[in-house]
Length: 215
Image (tube, rainbow, N blue to C red; front, top):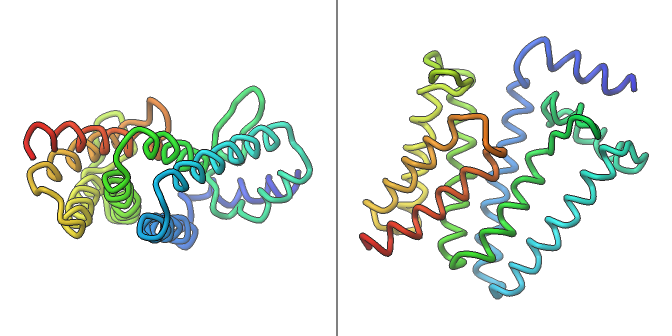
Protein backbone atom coordinates (compact mmCIF):
# COMPACT_ATOMS: atom_id res chain seq x y z
CA UNK A 1 0.00 0.00 0.00
CA UNK A 2 1.71 3.14 -1.23
CA UNK A 3 -0.05 5.45 1.26
CA UNK A 4 1.15 3.33 4.18
CA UNK A 5 4.72 3.19 2.89
CA UNK A 6 4.71 6.97 2.45
CA UNK A 7 3.43 7.65 5.98
CA UNK A 8 5.85 5.16 7.56
CA UNK A 9 8.76 6.62 5.60
CA UNK A 10 7.98 10.12 6.86
CA UNK A 11 7.55 8.99 10.46
CA UNK A 12 10.75 6.92 10.53
CA UNK A 13 12.85 9.89 9.53
CA UNK A 14 12.22 11.27 13.01
CA UNK A 15 9.98 10.85 16.02
CA UNK A 16 6.28 11.46 15.58
CA UNK A 17 6.15 15.03 14.22
CA UNK A 18 5.51 17.66 16.89
CA UNK A 19 2.32 18.85 15.19
CA UNK A 20 0.94 15.30 15.09
CA UNK A 21 1.93 14.68 18.70
CA UNK A 22 0.20 17.85 19.80
CA UNK A 23 -2.90 16.86 17.85
CA UNK A 24 -2.78 13.38 19.37
CA UNK A 25 -2.51 14.77 22.89
CA UNK A 26 -5.16 17.42 22.26
CA UNK A 27 -7.54 14.49 21.79
CA UNK A 28 -6.64 13.46 25.34
CA UNK A 29 -7.70 16.86 26.65
CA UNK A 30 -10.92 16.70 24.63
CA UNK A 31 -11.63 13.23 26.02
CA UNK A 32 -11.15 14.54 29.56
CA UNK A 33 -13.71 17.29 28.88
CA UNK A 34 -16.14 14.74 27.43
CA UNK A 35 -15.82 12.62 30.57
CA UNK A 36 -16.56 15.65 32.74
CA UNK A 37 -19.68 16.47 30.73
CA UNK A 38 -20.88 12.86 30.86
CA UNK A 39 -20.34 12.74 34.61
CA UNK A 40 -22.39 15.90 35.11
CA UNK A 41 -25.25 15.01 32.78
CA UNK A 42 -25.62 11.22 32.65
CA UNK A 43 -26.23 8.34 35.04
CA UNK A 44 -23.54 5.82 35.94
CA UNK A 45 -25.38 3.02 34.15
CA UNK A 46 -25.53 5.07 30.94
CA UNK A 47 -21.80 5.88 31.09
CA UNK A 48 -20.85 2.25 31.77
CA UNK A 49 -23.10 1.09 28.92
CA UNK A 50 -21.65 3.70 26.57
CA UNK A 51 -18.06 2.78 27.36
CA UNK A 52 -18.71 -0.95 27.02
CA UNK A 53 -20.43 -0.37 23.66
CA UNK A 54 -17.60 1.84 22.39
CA UNK A 55 -14.98 -0.65 23.56
CA UNK A 56 -16.74 -3.45 21.65
CA UNK A 57 -16.87 -1.28 18.52
CA UNK A 58 -13.19 -0.45 18.94
CA UNK A 59 -12.37 -4.14 19.17
CA UNK A 60 -14.41 -4.82 16.04
CA UNK A 61 -12.57 -2.06 14.20
CA UNK A 62 -9.20 -3.52 15.26
CA UNK A 63 -10.23 -6.95 13.97
CA UNK A 64 -11.36 -5.52 10.64
CA UNK A 65 -8.19 -3.44 10.42
CA UNK A 66 -5.78 -6.36 10.85
CA UNK A 67 -7.88 -8.32 8.35
CA UNK A 68 -7.29 -5.48 5.85
CA UNK A 69 -11.00 -4.79 5.50
CA UNK A 70 -11.38 -2.01 2.86
CA UNK A 71 -13.68 0.14 5.02
CA UNK A 72 -11.43 -0.13 8.06
CA UNK A 73 -8.33 0.64 5.99
CA UNK A 74 -10.03 3.67 4.46
CA UNK A 75 -10.87 4.96 7.94
CA UNK A 76 -7.33 4.28 9.09
CA UNK A 77 -5.98 6.33 6.18
CA UNK A 78 -7.86 9.38 7.44
CA UNK A 79 -6.10 9.25 10.81
CA UNK A 80 -2.77 7.74 9.75
CA UNK A 81 -0.93 11.00 10.43
CA UNK A 82 -1.80 10.62 14.13
CA UNK A 83 -0.77 6.98 14.39
CA UNK A 84 2.58 5.52 15.32
CA UNK A 85 4.44 3.19 12.90
CA UNK A 86 3.76 0.06 14.95
CA UNK A 87 0.04 0.86 15.02
CA UNK A 88 -0.03 1.31 11.26
CA UNK A 89 1.79 -1.98 10.69
CA UNK A 90 -0.59 -4.03 12.84
CA UNK A 91 -1.36 -7.40 11.25
CA UNK A 92 -2.63 -10.87 12.15
CA UNK A 93 0.89 -12.02 12.98
CA UNK A 94 1.94 -8.87 14.80
CA UNK A 95 -0.97 -7.08 16.45
CA UNK A 96 -0.50 -3.53 17.75
CA UNK A 97 -3.72 -1.92 18.91
CA UNK A 98 -4.14 1.83 18.49
CA UNK A 99 -4.08 4.05 21.57
CA UNK A 100 -7.77 4.95 21.31
CA UNK A 101 -8.74 1.29 21.62
CA UNK A 102 -6.75 0.91 24.83
CA UNK A 103 -8.35 4.10 26.18
CA UNK A 104 -11.87 2.81 25.57
CA UNK A 105 -11.09 -0.63 27.00
CA UNK A 106 -9.63 0.86 30.15
CA UNK A 107 -12.58 3.22 30.58
CA UNK A 108 -15.04 0.36 30.18
CA UNK A 109 -13.25 -1.63 32.88
CA UNK A 110 -12.76 1.26 35.30
CA UNK A 111 -16.30 2.64 35.07
CA UNK A 112 -17.58 -0.84 35.84
CA UNK A 113 -15.24 -1.44 38.81
CA UNK A 114 -14.90 1.90 40.61
CA UNK A 115 -17.01 4.87 41.78
CA UNK A 116 -17.69 7.18 38.85
CA UNK A 117 -16.34 10.37 40.42
CA UNK A 118 -13.05 8.60 41.15
CA UNK A 119 -12.76 7.24 37.62
CA UNK A 120 -13.46 10.65 36.11
CA UNK A 121 -10.88 12.47 38.24
CA UNK A 122 -8.17 9.80 37.87
CA UNK A 123 -8.72 9.38 34.16
CA UNK A 124 -8.78 13.11 33.52
CA UNK A 125 -5.54 13.25 35.51
CA UNK A 126 -4.00 10.55 33.32
CA UNK A 127 -5.11 12.12 30.03
CA UNK A 128 -3.66 15.52 30.91
CA UNK A 129 -0.51 14.20 32.62
CA UNK A 130 0.24 11.79 29.77
CA UNK A 131 -0.02 14.64 27.29
CA UNK A 132 2.33 16.82 29.33
CA UNK A 133 4.78 13.93 29.74
CA UNK A 134 4.88 13.35 25.99
CA UNK A 135 5.40 16.99 25.11
CA UNK A 136 8.03 17.78 27.75
CA UNK A 137 9.67 14.36 27.66
CA UNK A 138 10.12 14.00 23.93
CA UNK A 139 11.17 17.52 23.08
CA UNK A 140 12.81 18.75 26.27
CA UNK A 141 13.85 15.52 27.98
CA UNK A 142 17.53 14.56 27.96
CA UNK A 143 17.77 12.04 30.82
CA UNK A 144 16.29 8.62 30.02
CA UNK A 145 15.22 6.13 32.64
CA UNK A 146 17.27 2.89 32.52
CA UNK A 147 16.09 0.54 29.76
CA UNK A 148 13.30 2.90 28.76
CA UNK A 149 12.55 5.51 26.10
CA UNK A 150 10.82 7.62 28.73
CA UNK A 151 12.69 10.52 30.29
CA UNK A 152 13.00 11.87 33.81
CA UNK A 153 11.75 15.25 32.58
CA UNK A 154 8.65 13.62 31.11
CA UNK A 155 7.92 11.78 34.35
CA UNK A 156 8.32 14.99 36.33
CA UNK A 157 5.89 16.75 33.97
CA UNK A 158 3.49 13.83 34.44
CA UNK A 159 3.68 14.07 38.22
CA UNK A 160 3.29 17.84 38.49
CA UNK A 161 0.46 18.16 35.95
CA UNK A 162 -1.27 15.07 37.35
CA UNK A 163 -1.12 16.41 40.89
CA UNK A 164 -2.46 19.77 39.72
CA UNK A 165 -5.34 18.03 37.95
CA UNK A 166 -6.36 16.04 41.02
CA UNK A 167 -6.06 19.18 43.13
CA UNK A 168 -8.57 20.77 40.75
CA UNK A 169 -10.95 17.95 41.68
CA UNK A 170 -10.32 18.78 45.37
CA UNK A 171 -8.74 15.42 46.04
CA UNK A 172 -7.03 14.51 49.30
CA UNK A 173 -3.48 15.80 48.73
CA UNK A 174 -1.67 12.84 50.31
CA UNK A 175 -3.82 10.30 48.46
CA UNK A 176 -3.36 12.25 45.22
CA UNK A 177 0.43 12.33 45.66
CA UNK A 178 0.60 8.57 46.15
CA UNK A 179 -1.70 7.81 43.21
CA UNK A 180 0.03 10.19 40.80
CA UNK A 181 3.52 9.09 41.85
CA UNK A 182 2.76 5.41 41.25
CA UNK A 183 0.97 6.27 38.00
CA UNK A 184 4.05 8.20 36.83
CA UNK A 185 6.25 5.20 37.66
CA UNK A 186 3.83 2.84 35.90
CA UNK A 187 4.11 5.01 32.78
CA UNK A 188 7.88 4.43 32.43
CA UNK A 189 8.08 0.77 31.22
CA UNK A 190 6.78 -0.32 27.82
CA UNK A 191 4.92 -3.36 29.20
CA UNK A 192 2.72 -5.00 30.37
CA UNK A 193 -0.07 -3.79 28.12
CA UNK A 194 -0.24 -0.30 26.65
CA UNK A 195 0.23 2.69 28.97
CA UNK A 196 -3.25 3.95 27.99
CA UNK A 197 -4.59 0.85 29.75
CA UNK A 198 -1.97 0.18 32.42
CA UNK A 199 -1.50 3.66 33.89
CA UNK A 200 -5.18 4.61 34.49
CA UNK A 201 -5.73 1.20 36.06
CA UNK A 202 -2.81 1.74 38.46
CA UNK A 203 -3.84 5.33 39.25
CA UNK A 204 -7.48 4.51 40.00
CA UNK A 205 -6.75 1.33 41.95
CA UNK A 206 -4.11 3.05 44.09
CA UNK A 207 -6.37 6.04 44.67
CA UNK A 208 -9.25 3.75 45.68
CA UNK A 209 -7.12 1.81 48.18
CA UNK A 210 -5.22 4.84 49.53
CA UNK A 211 -8.39 6.85 50.09
CA UNK A 212 -9.84 4.08 52.20
CA UNK A 213 -6.67 3.69 54.22
CA UNK A 214 -5.69 7.34 54.59
CA UNK A 215 -8.74 9.42 53.62
